[in-house]
Image (cartoon, rainbow, N blue to C red; front, side, top):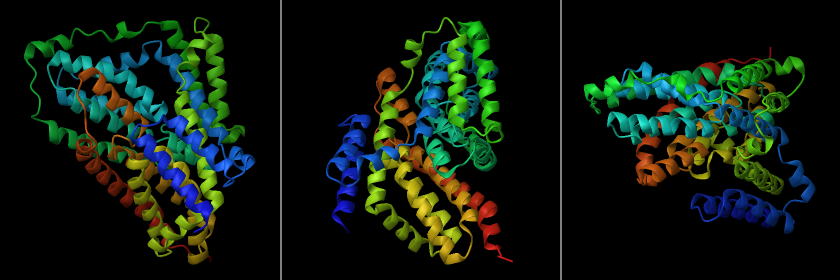
Length: 441
């Protein structure tokens, strides 16, 4: 192992350790790590800067702007209150509806924003019914992470994968959304089974739910109407962006700019504050750190290890990607998918040369394996996703209850194991079997 490989690995591990332990701000940690790798010559400044995926960053910023404006109308609170009223005060029914609503919103919005907006309503409802809020909040964040797996814009790892592998919005809908729906349905059955007799709500408190007026949550009707129209146009743009020959980032940026212009009572300075700049700069630094590791040959070596584990077979490679990414993401956060992308690219080349199957046929199945592993694996620990980190902070701040790393894993690890097991079956049936029957003639 060369000194460049050793240094880049050490810098990456120390950086992630600093972030996980909370010793250093995540954005500061990755940018500083990138600066170190550039300063000592592991990677030159031009290569590092070129590695920053502008498509991902502009897509994230644009979606944050859109969601920031939409959130000011009371739209998300209206959805939550509507779901709660529809449940008639039945706790398990409320939990299921919240899970469904959160998953659906997270597929098309930033799951962190969805969690932040829905959580206060969930908390108030649980207090009103006299039931513990923590199970509802944990289920909510699990649903947010699962739902976000379904689309290109639902979770940052998918944005990174989509940009790096040239996968469209429709590609994700057609390939990851079906298995996400299956996983979500299995989760809802588990909720029904696990919590059926856990809660008791007095009849008078259930009656109070009927008096809820969801429309009272809407504070800016005109802005809401404009926001929904523009957001619908953006979604349509995502669906047809290939035909328009523009990228999803351009679609989102156009929509965000248009909405700011037509919502005259919305000040740009206020909306910009809705952007999670810490996450943006965290990714900027991470892209550069990963470029240093790739330049030093670390990714090539990691791909060789996975290749040996897979036996050179497409199925073995897809399972290795799925379970390896699902395992490491709980420790290194879902943004570590940026480090996995070049590994998967190398692995595609290795397996293609060994099996005789063209790289073009292996490309998408390998990246769908990465998407499912990176997004679903984040549910295993309190550090797995940004949404989970935010939720844990919300619980500690509002309920004064500290959820330990180990305690969360008791719920998170079984959830991830079931999710990845279902994903494995899905990958075998949809991708591995057709590849196994491939014939060049």
